[in-house]
Length: 114
Picture 1 (cartoon, helix red, strand yellow):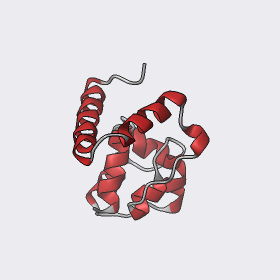
Picture 2 (tube, helix red, strand yellow):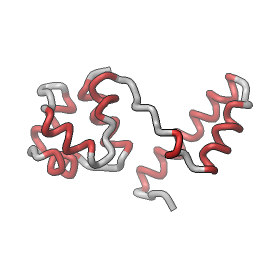
Picture 3 (tube, helix red, strand yellow):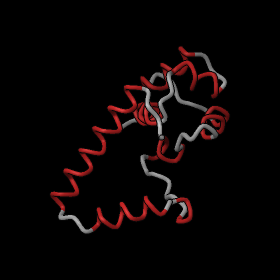
């Protein structure tokens, strides 16, 4: 997976369109499109700016997710994680697919967290 593909993935994860992310990064929409296509590489100023929106810049550049701080996980998230860990490998795979599909469906509908 390339930097451009990961950047697009992060933009989609946050529910942003190319115009909004481009503006936040101080570039034009065409430049944003080129970054996502791999026709150009984002610079440090762009990456610093989009990180403030929640883009995981470490992931975009390296493919490795930034570990979440332990205190950033809520009680309900911790409970969900504990239940997930008790599942078999097959059940975990089904659970990940179900949650991904639900999240994607909500993103397409423009629904956020409630």
